[in-house]
Length: 171
Image (cartoon, rainbow, N blue to C red):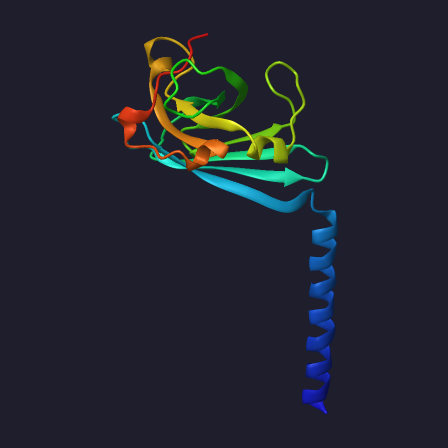
């Protein structure tokens, strides 16, 4: 009898967990679609990582830049550029939130480009574009790219070492 009661309690408990999991899925703000791309070392600093684009139910995109090798309180600017990483002076389509050195992470809700054009997840994945993470926002260090990688249709373009990554358009 005791084992039967324990078994019934386990089943009821399991149903409760399943119900909670279903509620979490229903309450999620994401569709489940996501795409990740590598960010390669682009300077003498040993920093690399990835950028992940997650589609949200409202049509916007949650962008997560995660880097390894950053430290301290530095904020590293992140740009979404038109064209692949080898194209010099490529236009900045969007300025993303910076990567914080201590955590190595930067997150942005992206639904609009710099010129206020709306953009959704599928349109981002169709871009011929790249992500570049800079050492600093101003001064000589703004031209130092820590990590970079092609996204969207440019992702098929092979990056051959950090010498293949072009400088950004100064603004």
